[in-house]
Each structure stands twice: as C-alpha cells, then as structure tokens.
Amino acid sequence: MSEHKKLTELEATAICGNDISSSCLYVSALAIAYAGQYAWVALLIVAAVLFLFRTIYGEVVGALPLNGGAYNVLLNTTSKRNAALAACLTILSYMATAVISASEAMHYLHTLWHGLPIIGATLGLLGLFLALTILGISESAKVAVAIFVVHLVSLTLLVGATIWFLFTHDLSTLSLNFSAPVRGGSITTALFFGFSAAMLGISGFESSANFVEEQADGVFPKTLRNMWIVVSFFNPVIAFLAIAALPLATVGEHTETLLSYLGNTTGGSWLGMLISVDAVAVLSGAVLTSFVGVSGLMKRMTLDRILPQFFLKENGRGSNYVILITFFLLCMSVLFITNGELGPLSGVYTISFLSVMAFFALGNFLLKSKRPNLPRPVYAGILTVTVALISIMVALYGNITLHPDYLIVFLQYFLPSMAVVSIMLNRASILDLILAAAKSFGDKSPGVSRFSRLQVKRAMRELHQQEFVFFTKGDNVSNLNKVMAYVVENEFTNRLKIVTLLREGETYSPELVKDIEVLDRAYEQIRVDFVAMQGHFGPELIDRLSAEWNVPKNFMFIGSPGDRFPYQISELGGVRLII
Image 1 (cartoon, rainbow, N blue to C red):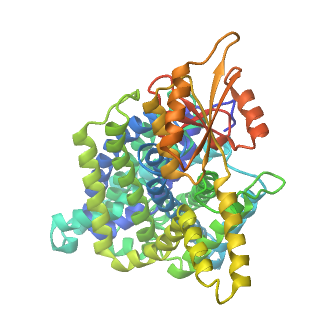
Image 2: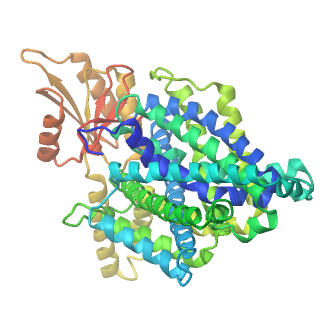
Image 3: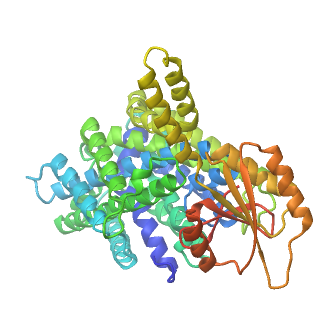
C-alpha cells in the first residue's frame, strides 16, 4: 500500500474482503436466530440490497476518488459538522468491529483450547494489535491475500463437505426444521427481523472506499463486485446448509462457533479444526483492519481540526500512538460493558454500520444535486438510491425494535463522541462565552478576571491565526466567493492567502484583483492577502510554500480547471476535493 505501487485487484479485494467475509463466520447463526428456517432467504434479500449499493458506491467514489468513505462524501457535499457525524458513526463501527472480531476469534480458538479464558484472551488480542500498530506494523497486502485465499478455500471445503454429508444422509433434519413453527408467528415477521439482523453480514463493504487512493486504476469497482459475489454466495448457502444438516435448537447452542460445529458434524474433527484456525486468522485480520482504519480516519479528522491536536503526536516509527491507545481503551470498555456477548455487540455494530450506509446513500443524493458536473464512471438511478436507503432504514428500525437496550449501549458511546466533536467545532463560540463570563466578574475579582481574559484571548489568537492558502488560475468572483463561504462556515481562521502562479512574462488579470477586493470588503471577518508568483504547481512547490508560510498541506487548496471548485492538498502532495 505504498504511494508508488498501487494495489492490484487481488490485493485490494483481500484487504477489504477479509473484513466483509469474516462476517460469514457468525452472520448465519444470527440470521437463523431470528428467521429460523428462512434465514437463507433473508440473506438473499441482504445480497440484493448490497447489489444496489455497488452502484451507489461506484458513483460516489468514481466522482470523488479519495479516501474517507462517508466522511469524505459529506465533507464534499455538506458541512464539516455533518461529515463529523458520519465520522463518529464510522469510529463506533470500527470499535464494534474490533471487539466482535476479537471476541469471535477467541470463541473459535476456545473450541481448540477449552481452558482459554475468552474475555481475557479477547482483551489480550486487542492489546497485541495495539502494540503492533504502535510499532508501525500495519496491513501487508501479501499477508492479506494469503489469509483471504485460505479463508475462501476453507469455506469452500465446508460447503462441499456439508453437501456430501447431505447426499450420503437423508434430509430428515431439513424436513423437520421446515415443519417447525415459524419464528415470530409469520414468514413476513421472520424475514423482517432476519433481514434486519443479517445486515451485519455486509459490514466491511465500505472498507474499500477508505483506501481507494492506494488502489490501481479500475480496481475499486472490481473490489465491490468481488465482495458482493463472496457474501452473496457463502452467506445464504452456508445458512441453508446449516438448516439442512443441524437441528435449529442445536444452532442456537453454538451461535458463536456455528461454522466449526457444522464442520465437525459434516466433515469430521479435521474440518472443524480447519474452520477454527481459519476463523482465528481472518477475524484477527479484521481487528488489524479496524486499528489501521480508525487511525487514518481520526488523523484526518484531527488535521481538519475536528479532534484535539494532541491526537497527532507520533512516536519514532510515525504511529499516532495517542489515537491508537484511545481506540484500545474504548474497545476495552465496550468489551466489559457487553461482557463480550455477540448479541449486544452486533446490535451496537449494526446500528452504527447501518447509519454510515444511510449517510452514504444520502451523500449520493447530495452529490447529484450539488456536484452534477463531476464526471463519474457509473450513475445510480434515483429509484436505486431510494430503494437502498429505505432498505437500510427498515433494517435499522428492525434492529432497534428487536433490542431497544442495544440502542442505549450505542448512545453511551455515540453521544459523548459527538459532544467532544461539537465542542471542537464550536470552540470559538465557547471561548467568546468564557471571555464574556470573565469580564462579568471583573469588579469582584479583577485579578482573576484579567488573568482569565488574557488566557482566553491568547487561545483565540492561536485558533484564528492559522492561515489558509487558495491557489487560483483566475476564478471569477462567484467561485472565489464559494471559497470564502466555505472557510467562514467550516473554519476558525481569519486569514486567507489567495495565490496565482504565473509563467515567465505572464501577468495576472486586473479583474482578479478587483474581485478579491470586493470579497475582502464583503467578508470583513477575514483578512485576504493576494500573492502573484512565478512557479509550476506541484508537490515540490507545495512542500516549499508549506514550510515557508507554516501552513499545513491540508489547509492549502487549488482551483479545479474543470468545475472551479476548490481542492485540498493531501498529505501525499496530491489533491483532495473539499467543496
């Protein structure tokens, strides 16, 4: 995943495929718990919904081929506040992913070593990946490919062994299960709740959008297709085979390790052991994906000044250890609150994950209305996006209806995270209130009041002194006004430098200076400086000016020659869409 060597189709599919395909290890049991003998139908409906999201993701990421997922699309179509909401949900989803994957991995390992303390081992696995990521060890494409291939082979062997088992035995278990009373009293109710719970089986589909910049051209839509094929085949097939081979009551007794139990029953102890070893590997890979993914997302949010700046602290290996330790502590707390039980964990995970998917569908609508001129390789029809969004909302309602208490656990983490983000996004107004409060008790405690005012004013100066740079090729006043409006709405700065680069012998347009003067008067809260200089726009120039002017790269923009919207300079010297 280096800057120079882009990921191939197999490598990119393996990285995100390990995440989404790991759900095969537990989603069948969840679906059977709520839909009974019709769980495989519920999983087929989930596959149909996922097919719709293939086009939705393809359009959004095709138009905005940048890392960040739902955070990125909302950042480009709405405000930073809305993007921060999606980011908090994504972090919560990563957190639940890490805990579920670690817990499930230890449950499968427990089938091989019965003396293993599951809660302690889960905590130990999370701590192991904390240490590895702090040391700078992240995902390796080759390791991801090896895990993914072994996982697919293991699942294929399980399917083959179960089919052979059914071929050599009678189908009395299947007949008995289908003659059992339908869960919920009706097929419609069973499918509704089964579909809602089974939506956990597509978690990880959004992973590919989070590292699209590291993928070779044309790879991203192929990863979506490949992930869809894997889960659309294995999830319903394994659920049906489990119903055909195992009594429904037995399935409920082995919720956490259904696949290894199915392997033991149909293929023997060797297959059960293989599934358990494979489960530990692929679920551990999903834990690592969570640590790496959340580190990148929270760093991006910190650079955008949504989170406190101390999160940017790095060790000698370049790892943001404060972010990683914070994430580990959050995972540890949710592990103890839920006691490692799959039900509450999956409930928290599903609520956050489905909310992120809903925001992505909403982002698609916003992209159509606000960025219609952006070229895109595919187009998701209005009906497609509408049906997909309604399906997500139905699944979200179903999960909350099934377990209202899970919503409480979800809110225990979501509300504090949004409170922190809200304080960071409104800290200029908060400082104004503190300053007014300090002035109000000046008569009673003049010394304390004076000291407080000095400290608050110093903090306000530091907040406002960060300068933004916008590179323009001569945009008209309308487009420059959009830049000013973006900065006023989303940033705390009161300084903006507008730069135009000239070739040798070239001069800038007098109309450009007049437009900037108009904007300088219109936005009196922002000091606008105009700089004309010779140079060629590129990473070298960005690095030099960033150092000379002490401006972070993510606070530097360039006007797009296509649709005249500003782009933000990325950490790699590329460009990042903002408005």
